[in-house]
Structure formats: C-alpha cells, structure tokens
Amino acid sequence: MTPRLRFAPSPTGYLHVGGARTALFNWLYARRHGGAFILRIEDTDVARSQAEMVTGILDGLRWLGIDWDEGPEIGGPHAPYFQSERLERYRAAARALLDSGQAFEDGGAIRFKVPPGKTAFTDRVHGPIEFDNEHIESFVILRSDTHPTYHLSVVVDDIDMAITHVVRGDDHISNTPKQVLLYHAFGKTPPSFAHVPLIMGPDKQRLSKRHGATSVMEYEKQGYIPEAMFNFLALLGWGTGSNDELFTRDELIQQFNLDGISGGNAVFNVEKLDWFNHQHLVRLSDDEIVARLRGARLDAWGLGTDTRSASMLALLRPRCKKLTDLPDQLRPFFEDPAAYDADAIKKQLSLPGCADHLRALRGSYEQVEWSEAALERALRELADARTIKAGLLIHGTRIAMTGRMVSPGLFEMLIVLGRDTVLRRLDRLAAFL
Ligand code: GLU
Image (cartoon, rainbow, N blue to C red; front, side):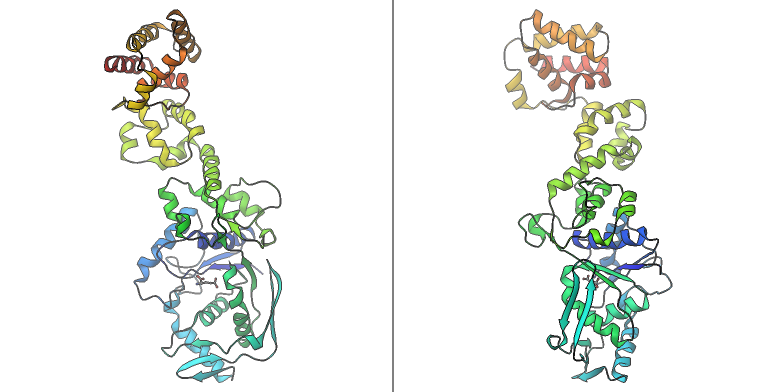
C-alpha cells in the first residue's frame, strides 16, 4: 500500500519550528517510500480570514522545500483541503453515528458513546499503549453550533483522505484513544501512529518565544539557510544511530525511518543550528550564494559569477555563519572605508610615525610583485628596516583596507583588492592619521 501522510496545521499565521519538524518527518517518510504528502488546513475554529492565516504556513513550508502532493493551491482527489469547507462531511458522519446508536444527543450537541473495554494501539515511537475506556468520557463530536470537534474532523478527514501514517507531536497521545474509538465506530482500521517527542528549550521547558524565535521564517530573516534548518529540524528527535549529523535533503530522504525517532524530548539548541548553517553555507556553490544574496546593494556592487567575485567568496566563505553576514563582509571589496574605527586607530596606530610607516609601505607596494608571498615579505622587510613590529604594519594595513580590525586573511585580501585600491587606501589612512 502506498503510504499517505499529512500535515494538518491549525492556521496560526506562521509556521513554528515544532510544526515544521512534524511536517518534515511526515514529508520525509512519504518521499522515502514514494508515497503522498497531503497538506490539510484545520481551520474549523478560526474566525479570521483564512487566506491570510494560511499564507505564513505555506511560505514556511516552501522555504524549507517541503512540497505537497495534495492540498491548498493545488487541490487533489480529496478536495477541499480546508476543514472549514468540509463541515457537511462532519455533520453527516456525526449523524451516521447517531443513526447507528454509537452517539447520542445531549443539549444540542452530539456525543460519542464510549463502549466498555480497553482501547489499544501500537505507537511506532512509544510501543504498545492501552487506555481503559472507563477513563474516557463520552466526548462531544459535534457541538451545538453544528461545528465538529477536533476528534471528529481529524478522523473523518484521515479516513476520507486514506491516510496511512500519522506522525505528530507527543501532546496528541492522550487524544489518540478517542480517535481510535471513532475509527472503530466507522468500521475502519486506524492508521499507524508515531508520536514525536516535543521540542524543548535548553532549560528543558517546552519551546516558546522566551527561548528566541519560534517562527521558521524568522530564522530566514536572521540569515539562516533552508538546507541548514531542514537538517537541524530533521535531527530534533530523530537520528541514524550513527554520529553523522550533516545531511543533504536527499540523504535525509534516503535514510529517514520512523524507528530512528527517539522517545526522549529533543532540545532546540541555537548554537547547533549555527553550526549547521555554517556547514551548509560553506557547501553552497558561488552561484547559489550570489543568487540568494541578490538585492539592490549587491547588484550595485556587481557581485556576480566572475573570477573576482569567486575569489572574494572563497575568502569569506570559511568565516561566514549567516547569509546576512556576507554583505557587511563584502563591503571592503567594493567600497573604500567610509570611516575608521576610532578604537582600532587608538589601539594600533597612536604612536608617532605611523603615517610615515604606512607611506613607506605604500612606496614598497608600488613596485612589489603582486603575490601574497611577495607582499608579506616586503612588509616584514620594511618593518625590520625601520625597527618596528610587523604587527603595526599589518594592523595599519587592515584598518586602511576595511576601516576596522577585522578582515579575512590580509594578504589574500590585498591580492583580490588589487594594487591601485591598496595604494589608494594606504594613502587615505596615512593622510587621516
Ligand atoms: N490541527 C492539529 C494540530 O495542529 C492536528 C493534529 C493532528 O495531527 O492530528 O495540532
């Protein structure tokens, strides 16, 4: 049987990391087994405009590269995929349970008549789970306003949409016996359930805004790339059993299985996400980086796929943690420093004679062979000749080039900047001092 899995978010206006991780697991399983991944919007309770509330979720999924085979915008054989458009289905299902004596009316609402006995299911993560029906109240399935409760709508839809596997958060374990009872009442076999441990903050409390951003798209704004977020989320509560952590999307599809989901809670550790981001960023091709950085400033600078741009990216790539760091780090390659960091000047260039030393270096750099080794040798020889520390010239040159104390490898940078720019910037700083 071809697996059919679904992600069934209630519209909140954004995709939070817990939901994204749930979507990801369902998607990975469906893709791994050549099945279908369905997106269904559980909007029966929401008064606000649907489109607006759903957009954020769709955007988050798209950014992560989680595509759906049936659902909003594309439809499918089981349309509609919005619960608010399926209300008649739930009313009919509730009536059917009334007619078969498995439900009863109570003050305008319809309640399910919980039979005696036990309700059991085997959870793919937690193993066999059994509830005594005595502890399950006769729960409402259709409210007096004729809107379904979550239990009814989710079961009716999962049956109609032929869902075979339900992967969702641990917080739904206690809902599952009620849903299993409904499957049986409808004469259907329940799907296979896998309840995934919740995501915790580093303090082991349930992840919330207190711990930082919880919206997936917020991480995009902060300069994280989807490859990294995807890899990071996949390993929140799942693993291959080995120490391997770095995976591409395709590798994850090939390796994902429900057995690798751990029963213990997963901790959202932002330093770990940073590590993934760096690892995936350094693996992006130049073309990819340039395409993702596209924007007015970079277009004006002319960052492209030429060899000069490639040299810059090769220099900056190992130092880059976030995509958003790059424009700032690229600036010195395109613009003379607009100002000099006052602390850096005070710390490195406050001794008398610094301007003169920098002018002398400029003189030497006017004729030197333009290679890293030659530039470094010339600088050190000049320092010896003037009995000053090479560090003074190194720091001075760095400040001249970037306005600051930080730069990628100095001599490599000088090579990329080119002789004219280097001489001009040494002049400018000497004149400033
Ligand atoms: N709409 C429910 C939620 O967002 C879906 C739960 C389920 O997957 O059954 O929690």
